[in-house]
Amino acid sequence: MAAKKEKVVTEPLAVLGNYQMSVAHPNASGEAELHQTKNDIFYVISGGCTLVTGGTIPKARSTQPHEMRGAAVSGGQKHKLGTGDLLTIPAGVPHQMLLDAGTEITYAVVKVNAK
Image 1 (tube, rainbow, N blue to C red):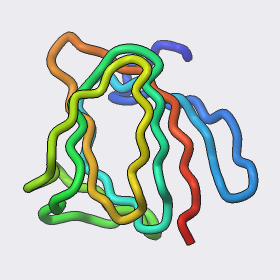
Image 2: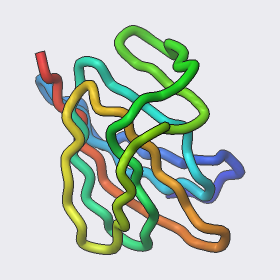
Image 3: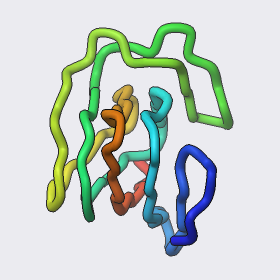
């Protein structure tokens, strides 16, 4: 992936049937997200982060149909992720990746239609 100044560099890999695949490399913490109709499957290629799941997204806003974002997850559980970790986040579950200063993460994500 080419180095860019964006907060997250994403490289789409494929859209096949009911799923899409990409690789992402954020250089800072991301916004809280909630996908109403898509499950996320993450595989950490390198680096690590803290993933917050569950809870709510106060003052969430719609960014596109069935997609919500906000500043942070409130009341969620924190999980440490590192190289080789594989996890799924079901549709409807708020989540947010938090990166400590000076840390990096590169991960593959498969988004699968839930409905």
